[in-house]
Structures are given as C-alpha cells and as structure tokens.
Image (cartoon, rainbow, N blue to C red; front, side, top):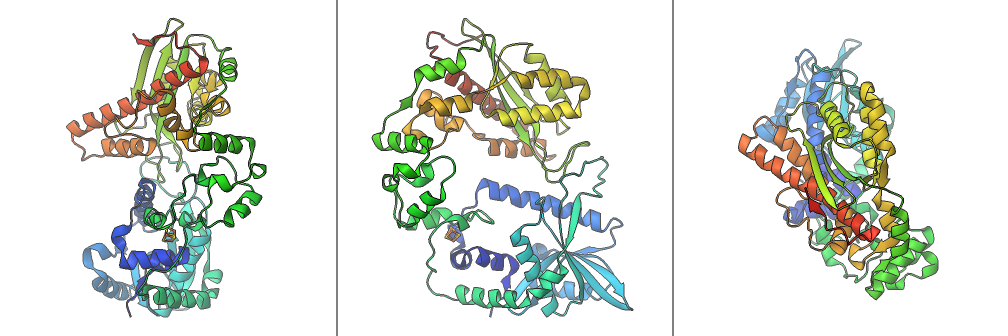
Length: 503
Ligand code: SF4
C-alpha cells in the first residue's frame, strides 16, 4: 500500500474525485494564477517561521525535494532523537505521510517531548486547518513521536513591521492539542476511505459545485465542467446574492439555465440580466446616465491604482496583507476634450508609498471630480496613505472626498448581454468601446498579472532589460484602465461631441 501524503488526504476531504484525479490524471490539473500566488505566499511565511522559532539557528531543515522521501524520513527519525528544533520533519505511519512545519523539543519529567506547529499564511484558523492539524498529529503519534502539544500558527494581521528582519509577533499560535488528539478515529476513517478512492479503477462520480472552490480552488474545475452538460445561459450570470428559494429551484435541475428561473425568484437586476441575455438586446437608460453625471464639472480626472501585498511585510511601518499602491495612472480631461495623462510607477523595490502619495497630490489638482471604478478600493488606499503620512493627510483626504464611482452609475444604467452578469471594467469596455481591447496588451492584462510583474521587476535577479519591458507593460496596462474610464464616462454622459485629443 502506498502512503498518502497529508495534502492528498486534504484533497480527499475536499472531494474524492479530486484525490483520484491528482493520482491518476495529474496532467489535467490547471491551477489558477491565484492558487499559484497563494503557494508562493506560503513559502515566504515558512521561511520567516524558521527565523521566529529558531532565532539562534540551532535547528535543522529537512529538504524532501532535494533528498527524496526515504532520506528525508530517515533523517527526521535521527533528528527526533536530538534536542534541536526541526523544520519539515517527516513521519509515515498507518498508510499516510506528513511533514510538520515546526517541531520544537521540550523536556518534561526528564523525557524529551515535542511541540508541533503547523504554520499557515491565513490571518485566522479555518476549518480545514483543524483537519490538517488532526491528520498531522495522528500520523506523528502513530509513528511513535511523543507529542506534548499541537498548535496552529497564523499571520497576526495587527503586526506592524519595524524593520531589520524583526518578525517577532508576526505569527499567532492557537493550541489545538485536545481537539486534534480527540479526532484520531475520524482521521483513521478518512485515511481508509481515501485509500479506497485512490484504488478505484474508474473516476468517482461527482458533480461540480460550491465544494470546487472551498477550501481551495480546485485545479480540475475546467476538466470537470467539460464533462457536464453545457448550459446555454448559466445561472452563474445572475449578479448578486442568489436567494435560498432560487438556489432550491435551481437544484431541481441537473443543468440549471436562466430560462428555467422564474422572475418571482429574481431581484430587479437579476431580472434585467435574464431579460437582456435572452433577448440579446442592450439595456441603456441614457437619461438616467446623463443625469447621474451632469453635476460634475471640468476638469475631470480619471484615476486607477495598482497595488501589491505581502503576507510577510517587507517595508517598515507596513502590516501583513496591506495593499500597498506602487502605480497609478491619471487622465485629466478639460471641457474641450483635451486629455492630459500622468503616471507613477516605482519599481525600485523600496517602499513606494510616500513618493506615490506626493505624486498623487501633485497631479490631482484642487477641484474637479476624480472618477474611479469601484471607489472603495482607491478610497481605502488613499485613507491608509493619509494615516501613514500625517503631513499629507489633508491633501490626500481632499482627493478622497472628490472620488466619483463610475461602477454603480454603469450598473444602474447599462447592460450588454456580452457582460455575462459582470460590470467589471473589462466586461463593460468591449461593449461601449469595442476599438479598445485588453487582449491587445502584451504581458500584463489584469491586476493579478500586474502584481506578479511587480514582484518580478523588484527581484534582485531580474535583468535591467526585462525590468524595462515590465515597466512598459505596466504603464500600458494601467494607462488603458484609466483611458477606458474616460471612454465609459464619454459614453454614459452622452458626450460623443468631444473628440478626446491627447495633449
Ligand atoms: S472540480 Fe470539483 S468536482 Fe471536479 S475534482 Fe475538483 S472539487 Fe471535485
């Protein structure tokens, strides 16, 4: 019998079919960019955990990738006879295999015991973390490791980095000893059932659903969806919250379609999406859109931010997962249709925040609307900058007070069937300005890619040539986001008379 790793057992807990596919058809897996980013965040938290738990660097790190399973397990067994902290110690027993992030030796009544810690990059304990700790402690205990306690450490989102690689306080521990040990019987059943699933010759039958995204986005989603009956008008296009009654009604269909959803179960907006989708016609309340925008005078500003966040903060004065803006693009439009553009982009790798805030104040003028798309995002970033730099707070908060959100105005007054229930600027733009396209961009085409490009640009091994290439891609991407807003404003405001000339 092969040993199933802890990650395979967690995959089984999410969905038996996922476990089976991971074993029999791993080539069908296609992880999203978000999943890959979360893996990378996990690695950086793991590195810092070693520094926090072993400040004097007395411990040893087991490297299973480098040494292979057999050597890693053998070395772990040897080290468990020592008094050193161990990172990534491996255990194998009862048909399962696990590697513990942190093992700390503790002397009790003359005997060496171990405090086991699982380190997570989230900011709270989640249900699957409890499964994770229960599996880990079960395997370790079965392998004969004397555990005195089991804990889960996650990111403390109140931590403020004081610099000089001082990460004391970054992790918060929760004791899970009692509940982990009490779940021995449950874990034993999971392992048995997971082995039975892994040994099946045919793929288990399982329909896609909510479980495909919780607790992890499953990399087999495209494959599984391709096996299911294709729906012409999926109900996932219905925006907003789906009521309990709607969900119950949809559940009575094997392949629910918008045409089967009665209007009395839909909100006003959902009814509009259904009607326009089925008729193939555009909804546009021109009068409503013009009225929503006519109060705003010139010059008009159009603003967009790109941000980066780190689980382990790298800049002094910042917190874990705080969105730090490193780029903005601004278009200014006067009453004759003349456009002026400004951009800020800092790829130095230093904290961009102060220069970003100063540049923003310098180009935003003193009056006139500042149009954004989803004002909550830009507004929150400006507020955070004001909190960090009190000397700039008045000017920054004055800009925040001028923000005007084009998103709700668009959502209220316009819908094209091609939007498929979304009012993201990328969904709306092809309908209102088909000559503009994110597809025409090279490299960076969305916010996630902008974050990845930023990380690559500030990495020490990135060549100057590549950095220049990334810089151009980021400038083009963010610039398109703001120009798209100008075109959307022009469309909604009914100002096709303006020829929009760049200065
Ligand atoms: S996509 Fe959903 S149904 Fe398919 S394997 Fe993953 S979790 Fe299971």
